[in-house]
View 1 (tube, rainbow, N blue to C red):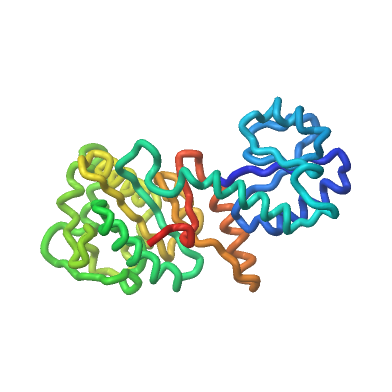
View 2: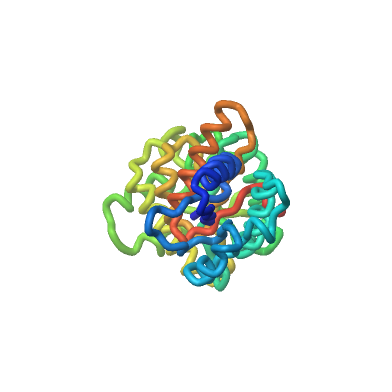
Length: 291
């Protein structure tokens, strides 16, 4: 879920101008809003307003960080300064997302990249970083076989497609069996024995993929060792990917900075993606993760 930023200004022409310019700079990092008629300044993470509205905003949204035009910004008001001040506050907001969720020593994470070249280098480095920290790591690639990094073909033992078949037929007891479907990769992490069919996973019905992630999450939570399962999605529809991410503890996603047409579309989709995340999902941009 994106942090919410409120632009609150009695001068409606000024308010609309600031809103439109800040919204263009938000680029999926935060959600910018205006108050609807009769709405109070509640449930916002950051509020920007004139000093005359400060007390009202503090009363209605006591948890919010509030910046006023007069006290916190230069004259004349610059949109770039507004964005920089918001980013400074967002750094504090993201501190809780620097590692596994507080109080948990297990987790289910999903990584999604608009830029395939970033994913190709980030995922192997992140898996190695987890192992270096002593974290038991399970890697689940949901993508065509020819895109799986460091793919090993394992023909001995039950495969992931067998697990999906069981999930389609059996309602209970599956999480306890997941250990039979994984093996230790030569690089040190656990992963699944994959089918010989290149597109089995990306053509799998979405409801089965959801069952798979829920079973994997239960399995991870049942382990006594510090364990993280990383789900790596490539080639799924956006709606399916969003629904899978909603089941996870952590979402890793790339920050789109390109000003090309494709970059603008990616930023729009990124904003929709993050806005669809429930509060239970911690999200982090890939460039914020220390490897």
